[in-house]
Length: 142
Picture 1 (spheres, one colour):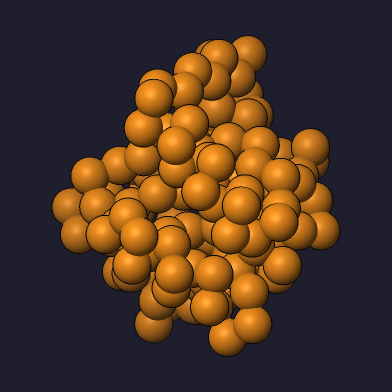
Picture 2 (tube, rainbow, N blue to C red; picture 1 turned 135 degrees about the vertical axis):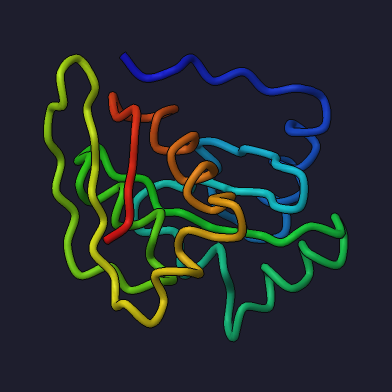
C-alpha cells in the first residue's frame, strides 16, 4: 500500500503558492533539503511549468528551492516515467523481488549519473515520491 500523504504548514503554503501561480491542481507536494516536488493532475504538467519554464522560475525565486513538476498517473509505469521525465526515460520495468516491488528505469547512459544524483539523492527523492502514490518500494536506474 502506498504511504499516507501528510502535509505540514510549510507544504500547505507551498501548495497554495504553486496553485495560485500556475492555475493547476496539486495532488502532492514533497519538500526535500533543496527541492520541492509537486505532483499535478494528469494533463496539467505543461501548464504548471509555464511558457519557457516561467512558473517554475518564479516559484524558485519565491522559495529558494529547485522545483520539480511531475504529472500524476494511476499507472505505476507511467508515473515512474513521469518522475524521471527530465532524463527522457526509454522504459520502465516493474517486478516483484521477494516482498518488494521494484522499478528499473532505463535512461541514456550519458544522463544516468544525473538521474541517480549526487550520493543517490535524486534516486531517493524519486523513490519517496513514487512510493507515496504506488506500491513500489525501490527504484534503480540502468
